[in-house]
Image (cartoon, rainbow, N blue to C red; front, side, top):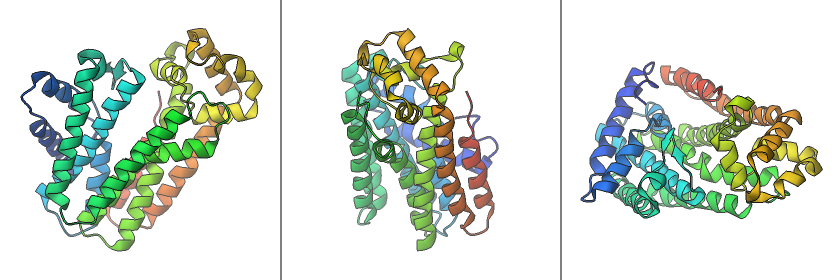
Length: 324
């Protein structure tokens, strides 16, 4: 995080305030839980959701730094809580390139840490939104995130799932928090209703494309770079966009491997990854991601002319051109 925002000095300062606030709020009597949260907060996350929140605050006149920092922190804390619980469910050994909380401290500490973060999220929303209809909007967003995760869980190892199924799950588990961040940044700064609506659409489309790019990166590695995320997704039965698009072309080619479900060996997973690339799954998924990116950029172009509008365009293009 320390170097990611160097070219955005104002944003870098705002994100640093969020990080400091989170570190203050997670101090509890249990040293293991405090250490667990501190580890995640310092583990190299980019704080993208707070960053999009702050960018959209520039379209309104209300600049209450304390309130805006707390709302931005609530978004990152909610994101962190979902990451911890995801790792518990998937039994993930790594998160952000370091040992995951559940792997280092055990599942009990991980569950309590995630629960603690949810309570801090509630505290911050009450402090900043009490009496606002955005309390309901936050509750609805949390429900949509959960439903996205439940949809993904229900579809595990399902070789007949559709692209619509994937989009519905992704719009909840990943894109909803980008949407909420952008929406709240515009709303709580007092931006116009049109900018608020546009902000929500931008956040949603960026979130969808962002997840698609993550999924593409899993399959676009060279054999030497074949790593944990691909293995983990296949082993847990999570079939992402590149695989689904290739699977739609030649389901019979994948069936001998996917029928093994969580009994696949490394060689099976490598064979699946090779099939995905050979059958054009990566290129097709990249084209879908490009379409959602284009939707976001069209809406950004419709925002009031400003330096922030240029920054949003630059950041969106940068995020969605990631490479391994």
